[in-house]
Amino acid sequence: MLIPVVLSGGSGTRLWPLSRKEHPKQFIKLGNQNSLFQQTLLRLPKNASKPIIICNDNHRFIVAEQLREVESSYSSILLEPIAKNTAPAIALAALEIISYDSNGIMLVMPSDHYIKKLSKLHQSFDEAHQCAVEGNIVTFGVLPSKPNTGYGYIKTTSGKNKCLNVQSFKEKPSLKVAEKYIKSGNYFWNSGMFLMKAKVFLDELRKYEPNIYKVCQTAYHQKIQDIDFTRFSIEVFDKCPEKSIDYAVLEKSKLVKMVALDSDWSDLGTWDSIWSNTPKDKFGNTLYADNICLNTKNSLVYSKEKLVAITDVENLIIVDTPDALFVANKEKIDNIKLIIESLKKENREELTNNKLVYRPWGYFKSVEVSRNFQIKLIVIKPNAKISLQKHIHRSEHWVVISGIATVTQGDKKQDLEPNQSTFIPAGLIHRLENNTNNDLRIIEIQTGDYFGEDDIIRLEDVYSRD
Image (cartoon, rainbow, N blue to C red; front, top):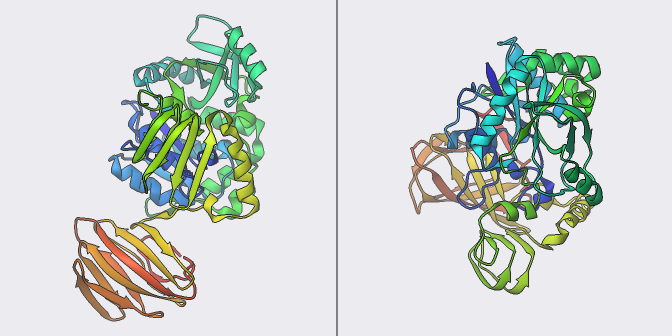
């Protein structure tokens, strides 16, 4: 059985300010496209079984919602209690697979890749399959189109076989070294995709990284099922060494092979890579905004909130979000890491949270925040509801914009239609429900002296949150 394993735990800081810790790049939708995570699901091989999804605990409801949007079924959603890199994450998925198929073959795919030629991708999967059946760990090397310092490299032996021997893995090189790699003809970009028997991977992990294997095995055997999610003990998993599959297994194992991948691949890790791989106007501009661009060339503009007017510039990255504006020279885009470091030092919320926050019942968006009031747009999905709750520090005034709101206030319950409103004083037990088949949209005006999300005392919650 071929079981896809989709890794969805990255943070995507190089795509700040659109990508943030609580809503990273794999879940972002540019224009009217599906997110990278959804695109990964939609390009899985037709002969594969339902995928296993591995994600951060904080992203579990985003994952569930994006699965629902593309009507994708899944085998299980494994929640990492703490990020420990790819080797432990893949180990948990491998343990899950052998629990029901001892000979199961796992196709490991990161969820932040952009691939144009799907037929070429599936052809490479087919070429790698027999090699994996024979007990090898197959990695996929991308045919490089140019010297690139942002990718790791795989050095292979020459030969006409589809499944090549791997000589070594190379870190991200300097431009001069990358140029030498390209000229040699036997270096490939490391795609981070793998095909292998789950049992073979676990055997190699136990051989070369016994501590990772032992912790993951203990965590897996103590797993807890929570609605549609599988949880693992943070106390156990926190003891796991943090290593990538490359360092833990691939650079040590004698079973590693490589199949070439010629499918117009990119990991879309930076704004200039998005510019390179997305449609442009006749002046070379990628535009995701209401815009007026005059004498502007080879630039990327993103904004969902306002008109962007630019003139007489070129090679710019302009990304506008409700709480942060990023402008950079496209040729110097790597310097965004300096901005990220500054945001970390200052402990800025803009690095972590968006104004748009997803919840299992829908989402809310902060419209305005002041010292003694806050305004939110709240959207509740069909047949969903917030927890039965109360607040200590704030009162709330709800105004229905569209849909029908079923409101619990103490021991009373009522339905509110558009243009109707109600008031929830601090300390009153309340709940908001949408019992219809359409989205419910309300404006919430909070007043008080504190508006943090930790001022929620949940008395009952269908999503099992504390």
